[in-house]
Image (cartoon, rainbow, N blue to C red; front, side, top):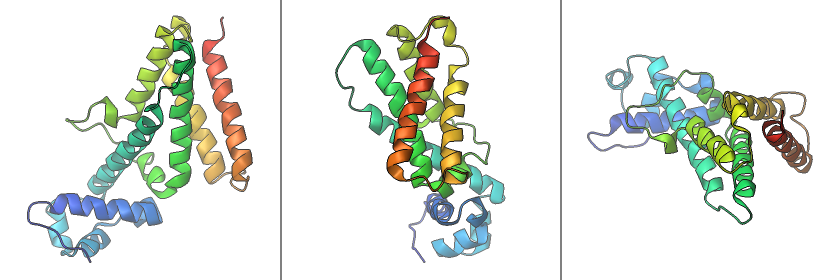
Length: 201
């Protein structure tokens, strides 16, 4: 069991629940077990979370923040080339970060996309993967790498592509593909999405 300092029990409960999600997925996030790991009674946990769904929402929010952080880390190095080249590269790196996060954190990834989690009141775009994707797509338009008429709805195109790719490699028929082949397939998929957004009508 872990100990906690007075006043931060809610944060400790969320931290323990995130650990359970990483280990066991959505089914493993249970208030009673979260309380036990934190070193308090389950009644104490219920004073901070009305039910399991509320705790799951916090776990999902923490997972989204981790995903956004992984995306931002891959965006940190702008690289060289033209503005259009940099914009294309940033879009690809966001997609790559999404897939790598899913493969690295399958349990947490499952919670993130099984639970509806509206952004918190203090969350800026840096903690919102969808907002980071939107910024990258706006950069594509500004740099001339995407036609403005292709911009509406482009988030859905990109998100659908990387999500399906991740699921196919996590739980689907491609789960046993060697890592080297998976990365090659990921490169091809990201390039195809980029071409589809950038090609003239």
